[in-house]
Length: 251
Ligand SMILES: Cc1cc2nc3c(=O)[nH]c(=O)nc-3n(C[C@H](O)[C@H](O)[C@H](O)COP(=O)(O)OP(=O)(O)OC[C@H]3O[C@@H](n4cnc5c(N)ncnc54)[C@H](O)[C@@H]3O)c2cc1C
Image (cartoon, rainbow, N blue to C red; front, side):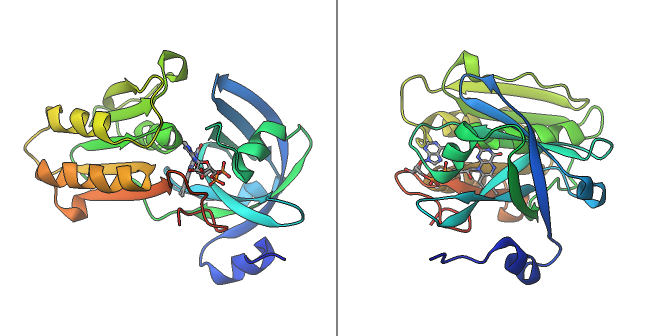
């Protein structure tokens, strides 16, 4: 039995979202641990979203149960009616990861979206911090910043092979942090990066997307750097040692 509303029911409960039946037209690895999935559907001509927003995929869990997993929109192309998602293969197993690993070109997936309240704030400078799961959101927002806008991004990944190229008009200082063989979900390296960042005195805006406890710790580190809570947009993306809830959020 499903304990979560089906996509056709969910869209009636969440304001401003649509239900999209999309076909997988591409599935490939862009790094050793990152799946790029392209989804296409004629209905996407009406799709509107803000950089940083995500979609909920309705994917199989165990047996006949279905649930949602949330993934940020990396690119959207209205002309070809397609959107790209980058799904991190964390290796712990889970419905989202399993779907990404086994999905085939031509498969159909039900999608609800766009979701997410966090997008670019109006600020003189911007700072982004998170792990692999936050690369899509960070890159989508950095690419949308006006030319020359100062921005810092601190992204923790396993190693050099997980770094991705960024093309943005903003004045971006992108720092990749390598955790090596350590488990994801430790805030130490990202906190150290935030503590030592040379930031302007003017009030900027910071964005966090990471493991639940890491996100909380980074929030405190940014407050210690003088940012008010209203200058920090933070979202827990996953929980260490715990599967996300059926609706796609950390429990
Ligand atoms: C708004 C939002 C946007 C998101 N955007 C993206 C995105 O663009 N790309 C992306 O890859 N993810 C993204 N995520 C995170 C992704 O939804 C979670 O990582 C989710 O847990 C994956 O589901 P799963 O079914 O693979 O694993 P789950 O069933 O949730 O968990 C199974 C096991 O895997 C572990 N696990 C889950 N995620 C990770 C991880 N990242 N590292 C290490 N262990 C992990 C859990 O602790 C658990 O032990 C987003 C989450 C939210 C809330």
